[in-house]
Image (cartoon, rainbow, N blue to C red):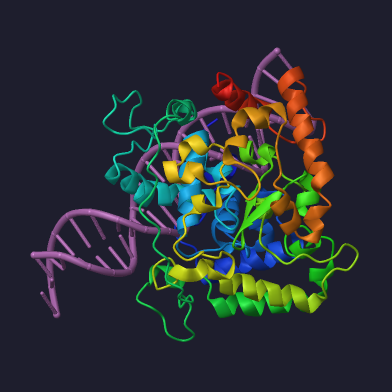
Length: 413
DNA sequence: AATCGAGCCAACCGCCCGGCC
DNA sequence: GGGCCGGGCGGTTGGCTCGAT
């Protein structure tokens, strides 16, 4: 295969994106969607290849990106997901609203790996480093999943005691005061986005069907579309749909901009069906979404504050949202989800379709989600059917191959 | 103040996969 | 069936920032 044909074209810019390029791309996608990525550069007047445009959009320009430092809950979730999924960053990212696979991958390589090693945990196998290592230091597609089963009796020390992230609003884009972060000054300013979003939301293009699917998220009920049951850790929604835990490709809605929906649990206010938000709301929410983001370096640490309740110093595990308590510490494993023992939430249960939904969680679900209960159960039922009958869900976009791997990994439990 | 090294992160590269012809 | 093309993913890297000296 090698390089894409578009990459052979001459005069294609490479490297960092300029604000002008960002604006062009953002304008184009805002108005028309990306459609075929290979045609985006030409239509948008960019001298970039389609892949570069796609990456820029996914990793930086998407308005639902959270930016900022990762919360302790997010880091713990990443560790847990990595233990099961391995280096499947995109699938891990699917469980972290507003986070990109690239971001998570960077975090893992630069920070989490180190923390785990300091804790005596092999980041690849999630086993104690003292034990004979079976894996190499290279990427491991799924060894951790198998390793996870062997870790059953060994409570896993996850990350250091959570330190509340500083609740500092992003000053990444101080108006008229370029920070020392010159490299990132090549990125759009907050005002840039605010202006753009407000402009676009009030423009006739914004109301066209072309834009539906990536901006008016509020109109979309991801949960019901995909049978998703979610739980909130603070404002962090945790997806309880095993299909989604297993496969990012189970995207709830096929849109012209599916990348925008990489997360099915974006924490965005829901609007009742048939009562979409007014045009002005789109702009407002976009502004809020962006404002919720922050800088990774220039003090934006607490950017999660808008979307994620840091829950003080409580660990992610205190919420016992994990379906495999054996991966958590003793203390953590002993904690129960409200009304449901964490021991009740095991992979075999997922595989067999016995997926209990805590009453407390059900009651906590927002109205749109409450309607998803039946669908969620249906989805789980379908999962069960697949497991027993090897029948793929017709309505599901799940990757059976991935699930087979997971199933095989946990089949011996 | 200058230099250096470590860390971080945006972007690129190479490959795989699926759809289409 | 095979080739082409586009989308997507994971690994890697170049360069910038920042803290230490």
